[in-house]
Amino acid sequence: MPSIRNTVDRLAAWLAGRSYVTLRFTVHQRLAPIVEPLIKRLLPFDDDGETYRCSISHWKLDERPVLHTHRGVVSTLRVDGPLQKAGGTYLPLGGLIDAPHVTAHLDPIAARRLESRLQDAIDKVIQNWIIEHGLYDQPRHRREIDRPRADREAKRIIAAWVRDTTPDAPGEACREGSDHA
Image 1 (spheres, helix red, strand yellow):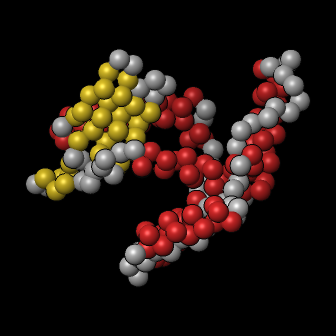
Image 2: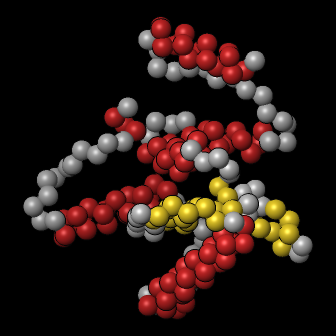
């Protein structure tokens, strides 16, 4: 039983004072090429690993697999799967609205209708942004980025923004992250 072995390995590691454990599990051969890269991205103790772990942390909380989560500043719509064939289309099993003073479970039709309205609103906002910033007039970029170069440039822009918006800020603020584990 893999779960018992995993528990025993974790307990043995804890008793021995080790910070790493060995996990053993079996996966169908068709899933292995999909699962392995995901697991490898979750494991590093760096900013990328922390971000990947945070992006799926809600998976342990939700009863159903989440198809989409639309987050506002204070409100969230969660659309639950798995998708169900409904005639010539597919519907979610339901949804959840979580807002100040409101928690509401949505049936499949209401969840689809609200998500459709949110998707339309997102498309409109993105189209307006594209027009405002003249992005149609610029050459189309590739999806892939040069991570080292792009990350350096992004951090330079962030540092300049901090310098310009908070003139009294200390030089280097401590941030809780995976490097503090």
